[in-house]
Image 1 (cartoon, rainbow, N blue to C red):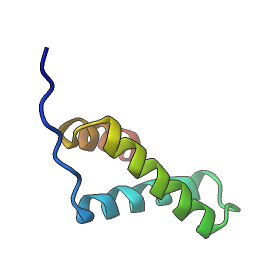
Image 2 (image 1 turned 180 degrees about the horizontal axis):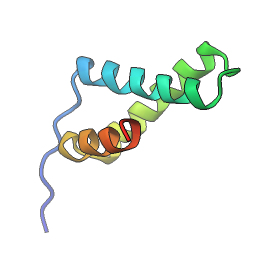
Image 3 (image 1 turned 90 degrees about the vertical axis):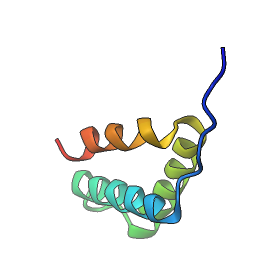
Length: 67
């Protein structure tokens, strides 16, 4: 079984995902510090980049953040 080669997420996509995550975290936990949110979102984006191809990741994030 072969897996398709995953293209790395471009910097623009990373920024979009980070901003979406940051916005959602801030809306759930308003008292959370911004610096912590940025660090957490950066790690999340890195982990998601390693796990999922972009074609899976973007629709998934769209479902999560734009309910």
